[in-house]
Every structure is written in structure tokens, then in C-alpha cells.
Amino acid sequence: MQTVHFFRPRLLDSLHGYNRERFGQDVGAGLTVGVVALPLAMAFAIASGLKPEAGLFTAIIAGFLISALGGSRVQIGGPAGAFIVIVYGIVERYGLANLILATAMSGVLLFLMGLFRLGSLIRFIPVTVVIGFTNGIAVLIILSQIKDFLGLQVVSMPADFFGILNALWHSLHTINWPALLLALASLSLVVGWLRVSKRLSGTPYRWASMLPGSIVALVFATLLTWLLNLPVETIGSKFGGIPSALPGFVWPEFSWDSARFLLMPTLTLTLLGAIESLLCARIADGMIGDRHNPNQELMAQGVANFVTPFFGGMPATGTIARTVTNIKSGGTTPISGMVHSLTLLAVVLLAAPLAGHIPLAALAAILMFVAWNMGEWREFWHLRQYRMPYRITLLSVFFLTVVFDLTVAVEVGLVAACLTFIYRISSLSRSESVGPAEQPSLAGLAHRVQAWRLYGAVFFGAVKLLEAIEDKINAPALVVDLKNVIYIDSSGADALMSLIKTCRKKNVALIVCGLNHQPLDMAQRSGLLEQLQGHLQPSLSSGLDRAIELTASPAR
Image 1 (tube, rainbow, N blue to C red):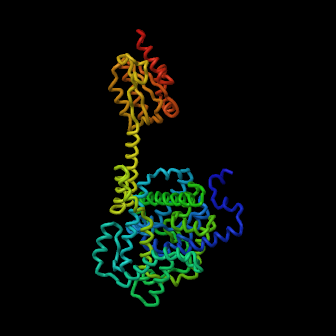
Image 2 (cartoon, helix red, strand yellow):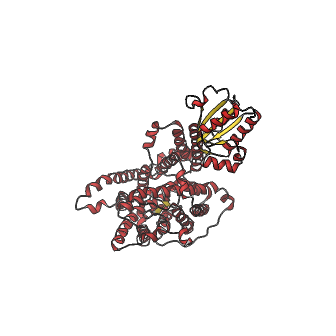
């Protein structure tokens, strides 16, 4: 029973009450998603500096494993645009063999995250960081596709932002006008098909509305290139076509000299894969009224990313566009995701030779459209509604992603978000003096009893509150009310201990009131409670009564 609880794919639960009707829906949805995934898988691989079949193999193998073993009923896994920048950088700097190693290691880390139930922690990554690097990645994808969109002759495209700009600038004189016109026509067709398909949905030709615009544009551009023999670069001319068989297991020769530098890229792949997959699963939950298992999903992602690279694949994660397509096409269980993978397998085995005529300009146009939809551009306009820390964090992550490196951007973004959070929480914590207006028993006793009430969290970012009280001690008795304190950390406990010592040195009677819940637990574990024996009161009123009693007694 423990094994089932530890690793239980959603597929097992989805099969309860499964019937022929639902199977038909899943098969139809799987076929549709497979058609949608075909051009995207090849485009993502090419943009990542790999051969097109790497994307197809990833969609087939990783897509099948993620659906079969995952924690979501409808999520579709495969290569994603978010990985393009980091994968291209790894291939450029460390080579293909070390990409396999980095992907496999990220798979292990993803599985361990799920195993140790860390799936829910991904939700704590601030939305500013997610939006910042998502928009930054979208800009880099668009920038990386300008070469094929314009048909430029670039021998080797650098991985860094300024290197890309320099290479594009010095190659502008090599524009291939047929490629540019074909790319513009493909992009126009993809965008225009969105409106055309809506109009066709209520006509006898509604079957055509089910076709994705990317496939329509791809077929149009491929036929045009083949019939007119256009002088544009194709998959066949650049990569020699796509093999019509799945690859065998390959154990590459690793370079350990360069592999030791893969720690940060591996962590970036892991974090990015976890964020994308769980974000996608949450979106799917909202559409179907379900709730995914984040830990099971991470373990499935881990298995897929560990296995796939050894069979010619690349990093994989949950894909929002294909998942939404799956839901809208009627997919209800992981069977639809598995059918999507089998559909792509059939395409590779039966129609691989036809892919050689696909023009790279059309794939670039499709990828630019995907990148534009991937970005949350309205968030830049909405920035004026938020405070300065929010703006700085989002724009910093965006800028660093585009200009420097995704790894650096995520690191800086998380640090900035943590500092912002600490600042905000510390600013919400406050102290106030309690006077006779609130507590009549203090009337005329300001020279004998001093009372303070604390609010919020007494942690390392707010210990200044206790330090300020310590500096203002000017009466024989001090009452500190902690009833409204929700959290105390070790630094807060140390600050309270320091206040106790100061009061003893100055011969001041210290009374602490309202110590409950987590603050009480921390006081017990830190030894603070022991130091407060005889000086604790349940409420502020009882604490004031005790302070007045002590200051009135000569024996104090």
C-alpha cells in the first residue's frame, strides 16, 4: 500500500469507469494534439541548435512517459520554447554530450523533488520572476529566429544577446527575399487562420476549423517551396532530412572537464522544467475543474528527462499550448497524451521523407508566433499599478534574461524577491506604546510602568522593534504584549533574551504577556521560556496589574 501511495500515476485513477465513448474522445484529441505538436517539436529543436528529429523524439518518448506516469489527467509533455535559450547555450558552450548529461541530471533532481514532496514549493516562486524570465525567453526566441525568417547566411550563431545582434547586423546583406516573403506569408496565414477557423466553425466546413494554423501554414509553405523550387533552406538541405526510425540507446563520450561547469545549467533546467510543468498543470486544473498531484507530476517529469536524452531527445516539460488544445479537443484522460505521442511516431515512421521539403523560414514564422503568445506583454503596461520593488524585480529578471543569462536572471530574481518580501514583512511588523487612554489602570503611573504592544512577526528583519524598546526603558517596570505577534524566529528570540538581560542590569521588572502558538513554541525550544518563569501573564491587563503590584512593593 505504501508503494502505491508513493508513486501512483493519474492514469490508474482515470481508468475507473472508462468506456468506449471516452476512448473515442481521447483518440480524437490525441490525433489533434499530435498534428499541433509536429511543427512545434521540430521548430523548438532547430532553435535550440539541435536536429529536428531531437524535438520529435522528445515529443514521442517524453510525451508518452509524462502522460503515462504523470499527476495530471490532461497535461501534454514535450519540448518547450522555455528551454530554447538554455539548451542552445549548453550545446554552444559544452557540446551535445554534456547536454545529455545536464538533461539526465535534471531528471534525477526533478524525481527527487517529487519523491521528497517538494512540488508545492514551486508555488512560492514569485510571479514577478516567472513573468520576467518568460517574457525574456520570448524575446530571445524571436531574436533567434530572425536568421531563418530573413534567410540570412550566418555560419555560426552565438549564444549571447550581443553576439546574436552582431551576427545578424553583419549578415543583413545576405537577405534571401524568397525566404522572407515565404516567412511573412506563413506568419500571416497562422495569424489569419485564427479568424478564418472561427467563421468556419458554424458552416459545413467546420472540420477545417479543427486544423491548427501552424499545420496549415506548414503545408502551404512546403507545397509552395516544392512546386516552385524556391531557393530557400529546408530541413532536407540543412539536416539531410529526418530518419524514418527511432534511435537506439546511445551512451555519449562525456567531457568531465566541461561537465563540472554544468551545475548551474542543470539547476536552471530543473527549476524551469518544474515551474513550466506545474504552471501548465494548474492552468489545466482550472479548465477541467480537477486538481493535479504536483509531486507525481515532478517524478514523471524526472523519469522522462532521464530517459529521453539517451535516445536522441532534449529536455521536456508540460506544454501549455498543447495541453489547452488537448482539453478543447475533448481529451479527458492521459490516454490522449499517449495517443499524441503515437501519432508523432506514425509520422516519423511513415512520412519522414516528406519533412525534408519543409522550409526553415516557415518554421521560424511559426516559432515567432508561439513566442509572441508565450509572453505576457500586458504585464509591462500594468507595472504602473504596482509598487517599485515589484517593478524592479520583474524588469531586472527580464533584462538579465535577455542580455545576460537565464541562470543569472533566476538567481537575481529570487534574491530580489526574497529581499522585497523581507522588507515588506518587516514594514508590516510594528510596535506601539500603550497609554492610559487604552488602559485606565495606567493613569498617573507613567513613571512606574511602561507598556508596549507588538504586531506582526518578530524575525531577523524586525528585531529593531525590540532594540528600540530596549533603548527607551525609563520606568521600574516594563510590560511587553505579544498577543498580536504571529511568528518569532531565532533572531527574535535572541532579541527578547537581550531585552531580559538589559532589564536585569537596570533592575527593571519585565512582564511578557500573550505568548501563544508559534511564539510560545519558539520560546520553549530556545530556552527563552525558562528565563521568563515568573514573568509571564496571559493578557495585557493582568500583566499591567502584576507590574503595578511589583512597583508598589518595596521588596521588588
